[in-house]
Length: 72
Image 1: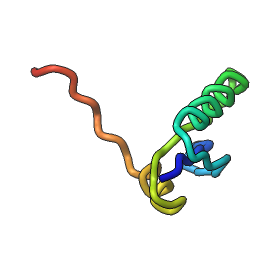
Image 2: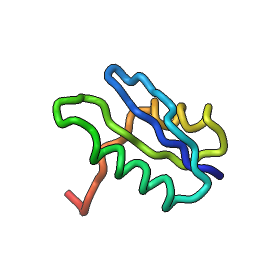
Image 3: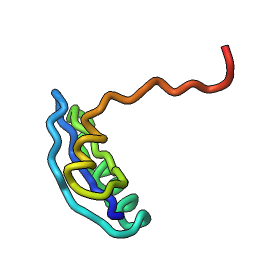
Image 4: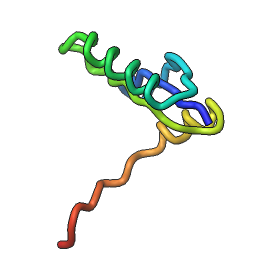
C-alpha cells in the first residue's frame, strides 16, 4: 500500500501533493514541506497509509479521537 501526502487547509480542504511507495520517502517529503512552510500559514501537511487515494481522503477527513495516555 502506498503513502499519500496531503496539504490540509482550513476548513478541511484536502490537496493531494504526492504518492510514495516507501514510508521513509514519504516521511522525508512531509518533513521537508513542513520545514519550508512559512510560520504564518495555517495549513498542515499529513501523510496517510491507505489502499487508494479515496480511502486516504476518507481517513484524513474523519475527526481524530483524543488520545488517552495512562488511566484516569
